[in-house]
Amino acid sequence: MLWLRSKTFGGTAILLAFALAAASRAAQAQAPDDSTTRKSVYGKLETVDPKLNGVIVRSDAGERLAWRFDPKVIAQLAEFKRGDPVVVIYRQTSPSQKAVTAIAFPGKAGTPIYVNATGSRITMRSAPMADGVCGGPTAAPVTQSIVPIDGTTEVLEACWCCADSGDRCTPSNKTGNGLAVLVRCFK
Image (tube, rainbow, N blue to C red; front, side, top):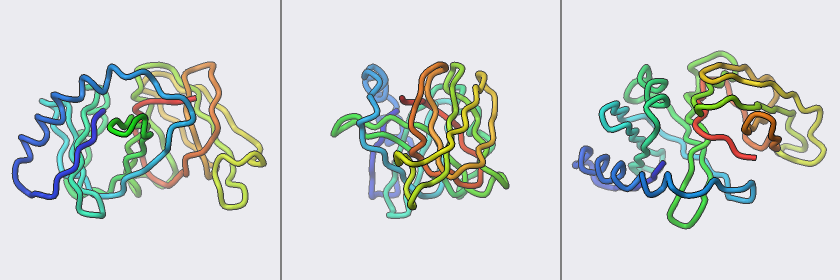
């Protein structure tokens, strides 16, 4: 998954093609550990391009951001329309690379619904927020469920995380009502 920024309005195809060509280098990076910085981009969906396996988002700050995903993820995103509110949750794995955890569409479901598009069975963990923070040491109890490939799960607690099946993670992402497509899980 690759992230690029552009302040210009023209050249969507060029921007997306450039982003997608360079994304193969990003995919070769090793999976980051839990110490990487978690971030989110809030904005509006501009384009889902199944031919290039790409997504372009216009952030609330006006930046144009492009990512490349596996075709299974793109298939999950195809139902969303230009202008839909979107949140891209990612980890900064190095100064120039970001790895997307999930793409969320607020308001597209009445509860927090997560679709497993990671390509493997995962463990979904959730916990209440403690002192206004996700991932704190006093957040309990932790609820855990196994989500099959292409399966969905609902999370009722305020915080969540996902990990490869059998692994553990700390629920440190904020849950919101809507539909989120899980792209990659971290410990």
